[in-house]
Figure 1 (tube, one colour):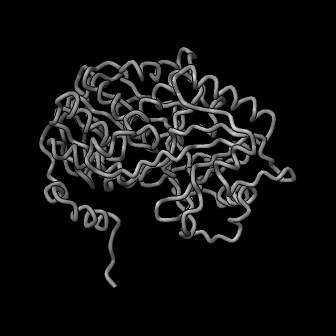
Figure 2 (figure 1 turned 60 degrees about the vertical axis):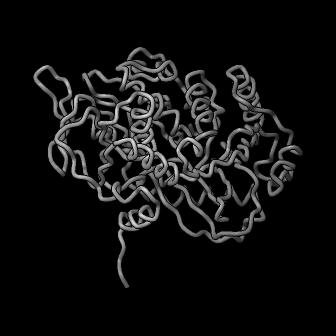
Figure 3 (figure 1 turned 90 degrees about the vertical axis):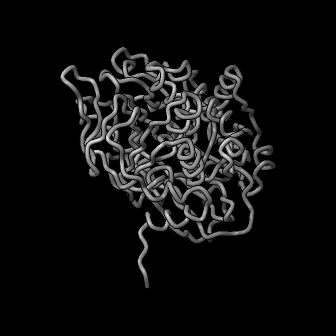
Length: 417
């Protein structure tokens, strides 16, 4: 039997789409570009697209050590929401949802965005108080959110058990109806195709091994496994490995990398109408259009670059899912995986200029990266093109870790981050 690498499978899948033949020849790098983006995941490709579309910068190279969308973009649970507590977070994620709502039409590519609603389950008095606080704060920021009684939560999601004898009884829920899911890999493909049509080079199997600087310290380009490539501006968007890349330019980042696990069940007929998340038992679940139950776990307790993670984390998550949804107790799991997430001390991202002239960074999204993809790429492109932050990401700078003005979603967000 012939063996196929993941790159070859992805390449063959994309060849079936008209207009991709040239792109998937994986062009040879030019000697220099105006801008280099390191990382061909959703955020990196979105950045390249908005640089071309909104700022007219098309002499851009997106460098990827593996294949397009093969990192965290292809290793997440597809959830989209904006019900975060602080102004900076609400602004970023709501900006993303506004872009999500028209993304398929804009890219002329079906990203399968489905606003089926995201429901946060409260299991104790603390949860109730926290989520009701979120509801009020969200409304003040123009983010939709409403409080549900246990009966209303059950009506919105019939498989949910609201038995009072449960170990973690349902005491209510917060519902954001504009939230939902999208197809993760389609987002990367859609942005890549549009960016490529506008002249952006997407160069795969091209690992960055060094960031070059001149005598004054400004960026001059990068060293890669395919040679030296010059550029006066470099944006690093490489989830899980940002610290390693930034050290190449002498910049230390306030980041730790952790495995983050997820899994899917065998496919079944449509039965689950929304997304349900629980902070107390730390598990979340939705159903894909293929019929699989998509289940997410929390981050491991230890730092690692592993893409597997600890078995006990997945076991705990499955136990929690079976307690909330007893009807799934006999379902069989199809596969599991792990991504690597960058985590900041306050669990909020960094989308900013760095102390090095011409070097920009987009990182630290923790578990919140996928849902922010369009908004993140949009404001990061602005930051690079204007050499100044967009008003939406001006509070997500590096300096906050020096001054103490944190965006502390670590303690405030509904689930993990």
